[in-house]
Length: 626
Image 1: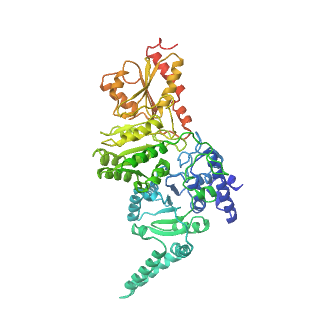
Image 2: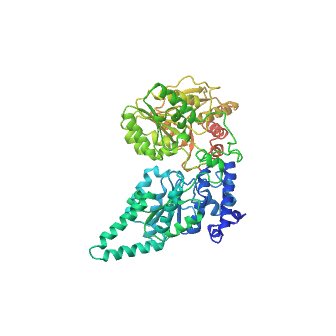
Image 3: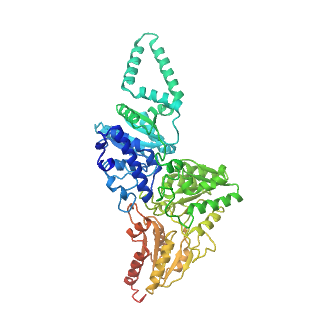
């Protein structure tokens, strides 16, 4: 098997065309087999097999620099850079990451995980190269979806105006190659990237401009005619106006054609864009037919494409969308906003019922937040569903455009807490630190699906901004703890107990109940409080339990989180602070299953139980328990 023998990209250089075709097939087989067991981003990686092979055959990325935007399409790159024998550990605890990781390989030049960042990073690397007198190439691979993010345009404008030598590969997997356009376009691209064309063009320009009287007008006519002809078959005007040379479109599954284009582009002395057309899911029919479903997928059966494990509970996003649709039926002001994540957040179902009231702004969280503010100021009731880790990108807009004006916009932060195998770039563990310090904001965290429904219903009545955060894994506690009502600012005492009090937020309420049960086996009676309103706090309940040791629990960083807020509130009231605040330490948490990560962080119920029992005993509670 060829792939087993690829220890580094150098091993690709001497392979013949037929061998490279076999290697591409083996890569696709490995991708499908591994992702079917581990889950991950499949369709996008299947689409860039030939593109990645071509890149590694033309460039030497031990010296050159390669940056993948988002990074979810870097699996092929990992296979070709010495990680084949570890690839079966993809996205597992202690295994290789599903995104570029500098600690994994010197071939991973820059870590990515969020969209639209690669061109900025590549420009920074190119300028570092120039200032240090180096000559290597810097290549950014950017998907067409990432170009909906404003950061791309800031970087393109800067690079183009400065004329910095930089190669941007636009991986466009939304278009097909039309034969009547693609053939002529490919021919023109061959001319444009060839050394002969560029050399001849310079000579013609220089010669014509030296001819008295007619030289310059003739050159302008030829130049305008060439530009007009080019504009008929490819849309290069936008990139050209930014100062970039534009090449393409190029068939992204024609490795030889891409290699030729890359070799010529490598010789340019300024910035260029190479427009490559690929097919998501290429080579695996299930992913070709449903590329969005196989963009990021849980473990599945290769033969059918069906997911291996199906939860009995609907996702939080599904429940949110159902309730939001119910509100929309009653109130014409209700609209929904998403930043390219209609499926992931559940809003696609809302859009099926109310297509004119769902606004997908692309990968542009900042715009989504400020547009929501404008909608609220215009009399609508916007609900923006954004992954918690992506919401970080819009902090200024949230503060300045929403909160300062006290506008009634609701932000539904999906994937709050540890999201598992996607790792550090996707864990939603900073949103409380982002939202709690902002004046006038109501911050909510439902303990389960039933409470989320009530929060959505309440939110239509809010007179200011509100945030509702919920995790990836659905939970239903209603059989043991039926949800009777939701009142913002009022905490719910789920279980009584006179020995200590467990204040828990969101996903950690279930863990707190488990801790209660384990402590009870030791004769320790712990009260459990569902702190569903993180801001404003229920100071009445907080004071009620101030006569016993308090412990806080959150799936969030401790700095600036719920525990910090409780500590501040208790100290201001001249009451004892929490004995222990359970949460994430001051570190970026790696990828792995949620249970594995909770155990790694000491947040499993049995681990917290041991610490609580020990703390109570140390604090003079020897008489507590057996």
